[in-house]
Image (cartoon, rainbow, N blue to C red; front, side, top):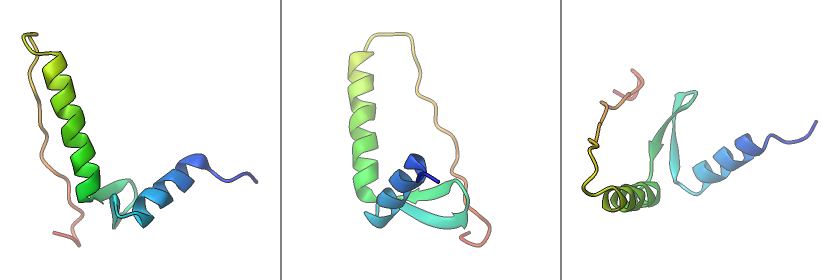
Length: 68
């Protein structure tokens, strides 16, 4: 069976410390490098859409019970 490219990519992100496993499938913490890229993309999108009738939305974090 061929390796799953998504699983390989996820494993490499975890190994590099960009994603942090929480013990719940699909729920990850994010390392500083990951957050830096996300922040840069947010600024790029906000600058590109300056003056447009859009609003930023944020949702509360989700934590697994054992981590909480």
